[in-house]
Length: 93
Image (cartoon, rainbow, N blue to C red; front, side):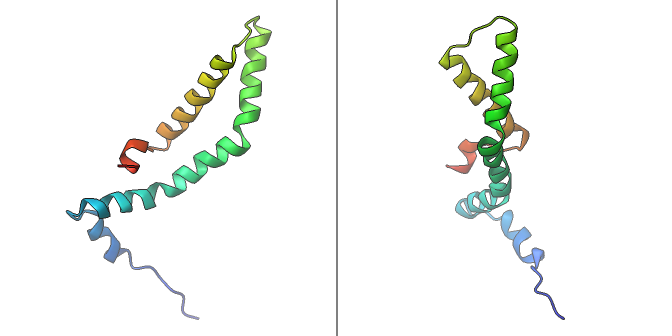
């Protein structure tokens, strides 16, 4: 049985082309899996993780304001983006 194979030799030289639009499109395609993983974490894991962090701070006697919780969320989100090598500014230019 013959399987369809993707010929990478056709795509790789194009990724270094001088066509800026294509380069941006190519980078977006490459990073789409990383972005999906980060969004999966946001949807399924952040709530529990933030609840744990908030409970830990409350046990230490600190009461968090809504803005501090929001800062915790964005710090976690930005760290996950950085860990995956996702630069939003480069992807939406």
